[in-house]
Image 1 (cartoon, rainbow, N blue to C red):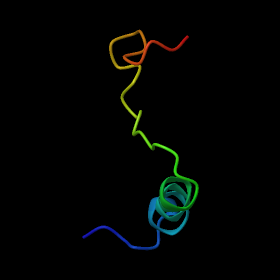
Image 2: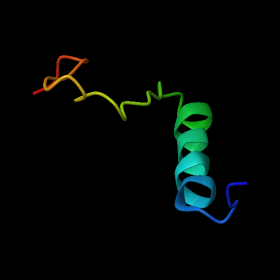
Image 3: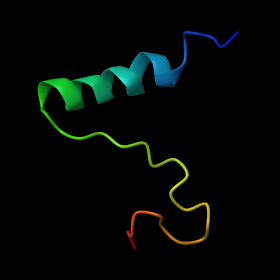
Image 4: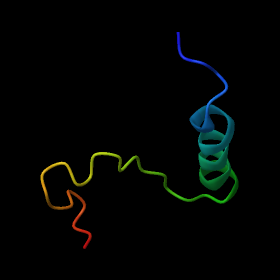
Length: 44
């Protein structure tokens, strides 16, 4: 069972919720963006 005392749980997810719901920004998970050697999102 994963620990709930992780950076993802305590910092990243609350920050993403704030950005998305309070500021109205669109949030994307781009973890695997560079898996094919180039950006899947068209970024340099």
